[in-house]
Length: 186
Image (cartoon, rainbow, N blue to C red):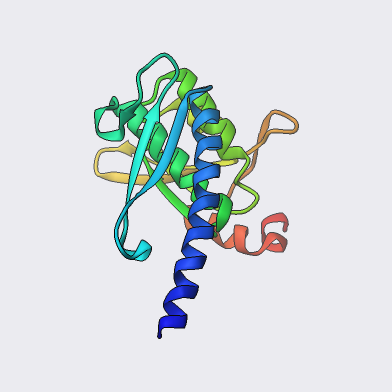
């Protein structure tokens, strides 16, 4: 039992240090500079320790995350999420209107960083922002052409030629096509 706990503590410490380094990188990438840090709140057992997040966007004083603006908090949280992904990518991630509090320049840095992770994970982003939509490989939406009748629409983008590709009529067909590339091309 003690040996297992020591192994867990050692693995946690190594992983935490890597996430900490990644967080500094992703924070600076998203903010275009600044300083960020993760620190363990000291306890007897590192596995029960809390984590203090500090962030200093360019041109500001070092602050606890609770003192940041909504957009700064969002970018800091995204920096931490991507720092975790750099250690252990998840195959799937759902982000619901994450870009709502961000201004145009921050959305650009967010989508640029996001593009570095799309080969490891599939991201579904719920958004109303045109710039985020334009960075997508495919969009799926719901429209109401007549009162009380919803219709799903989808479109895939071919960024290499700067055009859209024909897409299945409904989301279920699109998902089946994504799982079976043969069916999508047939």
